[in-house]
Image 1 (cartoon, rainbow, N blue to C red):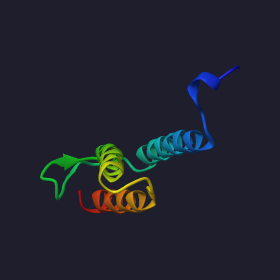
Image 2 (spheres, helix red, strand yellow; image 1 turned 135 degrees about the horizontal axis):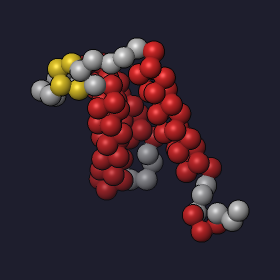
Image 3 (cartoon, rainbow, N blue to C red; image 1 turned 90 degrees about the vertical axis):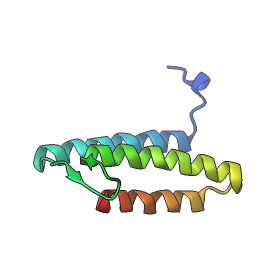
Image 4 (cartoon, rainbow, N blue to C red; image 1 turned 60 degrees about the vertical axis):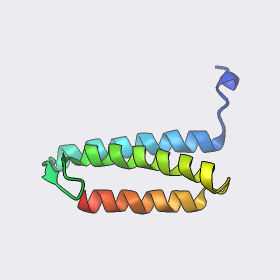
Length: 92
């Protein structure tokens, strides 16, 4: 199968593999430990899946803002996104 038209790189493959692994872990967690909605710092009731969605969406915006305002080195933006995701999962 020729996938040259897709522009796959090892970074792209790693990103999609990480997303797939995250979804797999979330599915296993949902089966083993059913989630309950809880209110948090955002003022809305969220579940584990909601917090995952919010953290992925936030990470996209953090990286886009970093590219537009700071520059090409995305390692600090990734660190900020991981820290924000940890905050969301703990307190949101």
